[in-house]
Image (cartoon, rainbow over the protein chains, first blue to last red):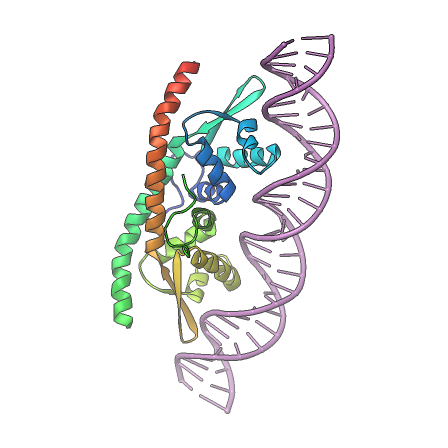
Length: 115
Length: 115
DNA sequence: GTCATAGGCAACCTCCTGGTTGCCTATGAC
DNA sequence: GTCATAGGCAACCAGGAGGTTGCCTATGAC
């Protein structure tokens, strides 16, 4: 299992993407963005428990991981999902799961031999 | 998108699993364990840059996330992959990817309308 | 029984994360 | 032009993460 999800050198590595997903608040933000629409920071802040600064920090982490993209529109910054990265991560998990599926067979043999 | 990967209340949540995967060293350890065999802490430490304590800490995080399982054998503790959890995480990603695929179509419409 | 090996426990340190507050500028509504 | 809104920047704080070191016990080899 390699640490590289994508072949683009500028793409974030697997651990960066998983670390970005490894926070309940960021998962909640991604869930909000999952309606396919753009959202401003204020809109994302309005219905949540955090301050605008905290939301901005989380969005920055998600953007660095390539999971969202932002666009300035006047005084507002709009955020939207960048589904390409989650698809890349999903393919990565598929590959890992297949590798581990075959490993699981060997492990079962090993465990049964130990019993 | 829900934060619950599995229906078992004792199963770790999505953010816990992703956080466990969100470290390059833990990914490297999982890669080492990916051969389907058991490994002791000393064996995992021997070829890596970290002390035995650091490796033990990482293995603890992976075990809390349900990604590995440990078994004491004499003076050694053996670790092996717990492929069930990675398969659960993989299905989660599949579901998320499908949700975001449909969202992507709507987002494209939105972006094209803005251009 | 002795020695080497394996690992658990705890304390320590540095750095980072997560969140808030204050202040400022830019933009939009009127 | 004025006021409200939106957001960027920086500093601060508490707690946690990641790693090391020291010490101890348990187990295995001989």
